[in-house]
Image 1 (spheres, rainbow, N blue to C red):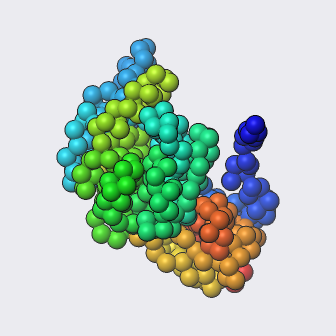
Image 2: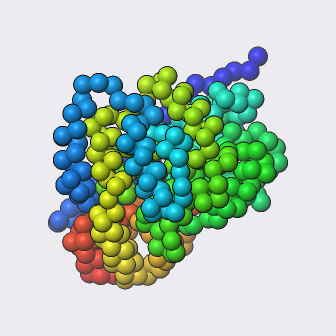
Image 3: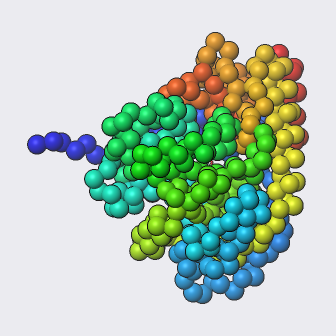
Length: 366
Ligand SMILES: Cc1ncc(COP(=O)(O)O)c(C=O)c1O
C-alpha cells in the first residue's frame, strides 16, 4: 500500500524576509520594500470611477466575463499586440495567480492520464505550486531541448513567461508554440508584463496562431490594478472553453464592478505609456544605486525587476547588505528556483523619491 503524505503548506516566500525587514526598517525614513512586485502608482481616475458607477452590484457576473469585458480584452490584443482574437475565445480570470495555481487540476480533469506540469527552472513560484496543489509533478526545464521525453509525454501543460519574472528574459514564443504542437502539450504563456517589454515590440504567443496555446494576461501590472483582480486567458478555443466551463461550475467570477472598470482600463493606452516611463527611470536609477556598491545588474529585456548577481554568489548576503546599508528589502533568488541562489530580484515598485533614498544610503555606506 502506498502512503500518501499530507500536504503541508510551506512558508510563503515573502514571510521569510521578516529579519531583513526589521534591519531595513531601522533606518530613519524607514524600509523601502522592493521585494514583492506590487504596483505603487495610482490607476487612472476614470477606471476607479467606473468601479463605483457600473450598477452591476446586484446580480451575479458572468464567470466567463461580460461581452464588453471579453471584447475590450480582444480589442487590446489587436491594438497593442497585433493579433486578431475572437472574443468567444477569451475568458475572464480573477487576476491571473488563481488561474496559474488552479490550471493543473482543471487540465487533469480533461486528461486524467497525465500528471506533470513543466515550468521554467527560474520563474514565478506559482507555476510549480499549482502542480503541487493538484497532486501533480512539477518539473522544471532550462530549455525546450532539455525536456525529457518521458516528462513531455506525461505533461498536462508547459508554462512560458515573457517577459519573464524574475529575469526579464524574452524567450522565443514561436519555438515554444512549435515545441508544444510537436509534442501535443498545451503551451500556457504568461504575458502579464507584456506592456513592459523594453527590447523590441511587445509579443504574444498568439502571433504564432491559437492552436494548442493560451495567452494569460492581467491588469495588475499594466494598469496598477493588482487590488481589483482582473485578468483573462485567450487562444485555443477548445482549451479556453473547457477551462471556462469548469471554472463556471466552481464559481470563479470577476465581480461586475471590476469587469466594468477593466473595460475602461483595457481601452486606454496612455496611462500605460506613462507607467512605462516611470519603470524605465526607476530601473536606471536602481542600476546606478547598485553599481555604487559594486553590483552590476543589467537592464532587463522586459518587466520591472533587476536581476542582480550577488558578489560571491551569496544572494542572502547581498539581500542583508541592501537591508542594512540601503534600508531596502529585496528577494533572494532562491524564491524563484533552486538554480537561482546567486542573484537577488529588485522590484522597482516604489516611488522615485524612495528609490533615490536607497541610492543615497548606499552611496553613503559604500
Ligand atoms: C509572472 C507572474 N504571473 C502572474 C502573476 C500574478 O499576477 P495577478 O494575479 O495579479 O494577475 C505575477 C505576479 O507577480 C507574476 O509575476
